[in-house]
Length: 367
Ligand code: GDP
Image (cartoon, rainbow, N blue to C red; front, side):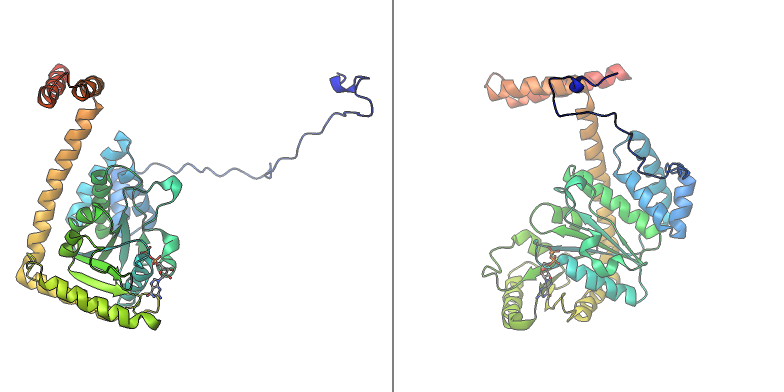
C-alpha cells in the first residue's frame, strides 16, 4: 500500500518501505534454561552443611522472601541446621556513617581469614531497600574481603520492620554457622534502634568511633556506649594521632561513670587505623581476650541462652502482629476506629477493645 505521506502534499519527501531490524542476539545460539531447578529441603541442608556458597546464598534468599511457600521451606531448613550452629564468634560492629566500618571490616576480616578462619559478614539496616542499594554489608565496600573465598558477604535484608529485618539476619547466622563460618560480623549504623537488635544476637559488640569531631562524647547515645564491649577510635593516623589518643582517654574516663556490665568485663578503648591497617592485631587481641574471659566465667552461655529466649518472644510477637493485621475486617475496623479516636468520638481503650473483639471473633469463625 502506498504510504500516506507519499501524498503530493508532502513534496520532496519520499517514504520507502523499511527493512526489519536485525536480531540483536545470535538466532542460532541455543537458549540456556535460566530457570534454576527448585531445591528440596534436603538439597538445601546438604548443600549448606557441605559449605556450598551458592546454596547457602539461595537459602538466605528464601529466608528473606515474604512468600508463604518460601518461608515454609526456609523454616524447615533452619530447624535442621540448628543442631550444627552456634559454634562461631558473633561480633556486632557499629558506628556512624563515615566512621570507617567497611574499611575496618575489610581489615578485621582479612585478619580472621589469615588465621585460617571463615567469615560471614551480615548487616542490619532497616532503612535500606535493594532497589536503592543497601548501604551496609555491600560487597563493593569491602573490596579485599570480596575477593576472599572464605568470606561470605550478604547485604542487609531489604526494607521491612526492624523486627523482621533482624529476625532474618539472626536466621541467616544459623545457616552460616551450619555452613562452617566460624566468625560472623553483623554490621549496623550507630544511629538508631538497630544496635539493640544487633546486640541481641552477638557475643561481642564493637563500637567504632572517630576523634576530632569536636563532640566526642555528646554525639553518642549513652545507650550505645553502655552496650559496647569494646570502643575503638579509628583513623588514628597522620595528623589525627594526637586527637585520637585524646578522644580515647576521654572515652576511658566516661566509661568509669558507667555501671559495671552484666558480664563484669571492663570495656576497653583502643586507637587504630583501619585504612593503614595499624593496630588491627591489638583490637583483635582484645576481642579474643573477651571471648576467653566470658567462656571462663560462663557468661557466654548465659547470654546466648538469654538471646534464644528473647528471640522466641520476638518471633511470637511478630507472628501475632502479622496475623492480626492480615485480617481485612480488622484492618478496616481499625481505620474507622482511628478516625473516631482522632475526633474524640470514642476513647482509645474502648476502640482498642472493639478491634480486638473483632479479631477474636474472626479467629473463632475460622475454626
Ligand atoms: P563507613 O561508612 O562507616 O563504612 O565508613 P568507610 O569505611 O566507608 O570510611 C569512610 C571514609 O573514611 C572513607 O573515605 C575511608 O577511606 C576513610 N577511612 C576509613 N578508615 C580510615 C582510617 O583508618 N584512616 C583514614 N585516614 N581514613 C579512613
